[in-house]
Length: 385
Image (cartoon, rainbow, N blue to C red; front, side, top):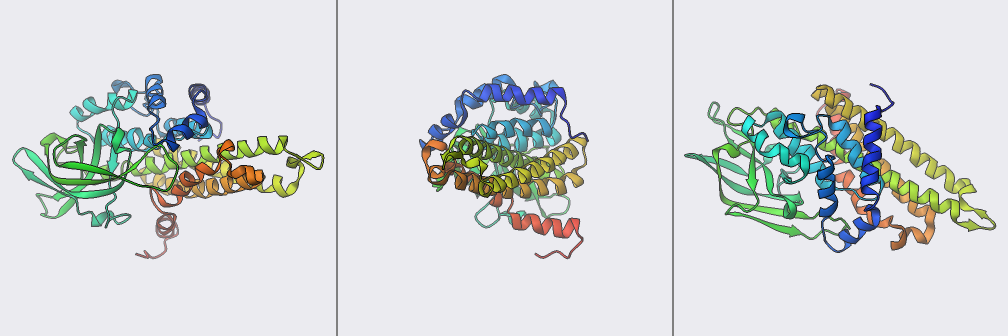
């Protein structure tokens, strides 16, 4: 692995910045505060091919990997315009269908992921099943040529803008007779499927939803990968999810530090810029170091994932997500402190990102569960739960 990005990767970063700069933090703030999704930006990214850089070329994608998709999200976030649906639609759902979907499913959905015309949400968390995915109670039963789904999901991002929701359920394994995890592509307008917005106390353009499935009937080919889909299909999107979450947090950190450094150079007190004071410069420098370390970790995780080593990628992706979340919260907090009262004003656009940064400690997996994972799998300590 090289620490120096290729010319193509550097050019991709520059192209993303060029496309997003005309939108930036003002666009994000306006849409987030007014409850509107950033659909114009999404469409432009899709038309430019940025949403599908990780999708195979035969389906219209860029044929690159998670490294390239994550740097797209990092650059967007560094301009103050993070898009949570990039974590969900092309990264989680796109990866799962690319790796485990049937040929028909790939041909049906992957081109839409590439140009942004197809948006797919991801429903796994339930009111009584968060980190414990073994406790999922959404069940799918086979009735003739159809699947019948019943259950609930909670904290599902962007359902209002999605054409489909990839639902994690359980079905009876015909060989063992036991329930096994499986995933179904559910069109949003399917009878028996309802969704209700959850009122969140953060400023974010993407909304969260509670889902209800009451005898939802789906065709046989809605089962991702078919009847023989392995258990690994469920976890195929989790490493990309963590890598993308780390990329988003890294970008937000860069955005905050950039705002702070610009302000500190211009703000004069006692005849000199406050940037000269080590009491402000040193904490911000420390944040920059922590962000760069987190960035290296997510780049390592993406590189390992793209190389095909899922086990090693799991460790690296969890570490990256943990480190980037901690770094982004510290960077935002110190950047706000550097601006004093101005750091909490709407004019500088820092405080509104606190909620998004704080999500990183909770989702897509809590930092405590990451520490459990590292303790057990990296250090060989006894399982604690």
